[in-house]
Amino acid sequence: MKNGNGNTKLILLHPYIQKQGSSNRLWLLAFISFFTLAFLLTLIYTRDSIPTTVAAAASAAPKSANPLLAKPVVDALVHYASNYNTSGHMSNAELKMISDVLRKCSPPCNFLVFGLTLETLLWKALNHNGRTVFIDENRYYAAYVEEKHPGIEAYDVQYTTKISEMNDLIAYVKETIRNECRPVQNLLFSDCKLGLNDLPNHAYELDWDVILIDGPREYWPEAPGRMSPIFTAGVLARSKKGGSPKTHVFVHDFNRKVERVSSKEFLCKENLVESQDWLGHFVVERMEENVFQFCRNSTSSSSSSSSSSS
Image (tube, rainbow, N blue to C red; front, side, top):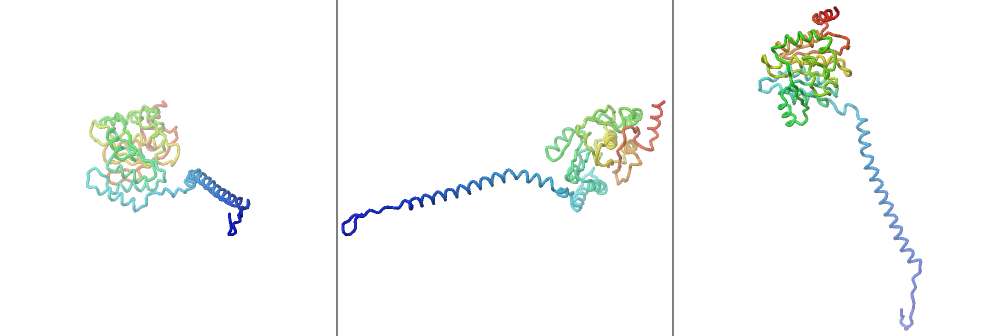
């Protein structure tokens, strides 16, 4: 470079200045890389730990995290359900009997219902956090209800009995009480004429806390009647393997002859704890396998036993 005197001057940049600029850029790059790596590691660790954390929190959560329905909610559901202006609906007193038992049944409560009725959605709602299974004689209606209400678990069953044959069927049970029609057995493998052996397999494996018999619906001589559901409920209650030793069994239309007579034979008068309107409430206890009578005061069982021994 020339100055005012026409002399040329050469300006040299010291290598330290160039080295300093390059060093600053390297430090900046290293700084950015470090924080990028730290961010990625944090993201990966957090993503992998979320499922474990959630699972641990779920397992550590107390049972109260899935509480029963509040009593005012239950009362409201029962009130509105009982005030349907429809024939065939349960009364407020009948609904309250069942709802009171379901509310005292600690979840998960296993609730078996014979019959898809106007109260189907109510039973599902009242057994909050429990398992409710419905059994109906009409396969098409069961499929329809499941399709319309995906939360409903419903199965169909084929009844082979007739109301006109009730007395003969009861006599048959008394004759075979030590064999096919034992009070304690797995009905899945039973040939008893009154035992239902075509229910879903888990129906025989679950320990039912509450059983409601409100089906089949028809009531005329050739209709199946409710002898089989009542007999089946009595066997399921006495054959429980775990859970509470007691099973609450409700029989609707209890004032009718079939329901009254069948309940007396297989649920037993001594187990009847209350009745309201058309509903009977029985509490049946688990029994030992070597007991061959349904009722403690049953003379038919003892006579059958003595005839067998002779």
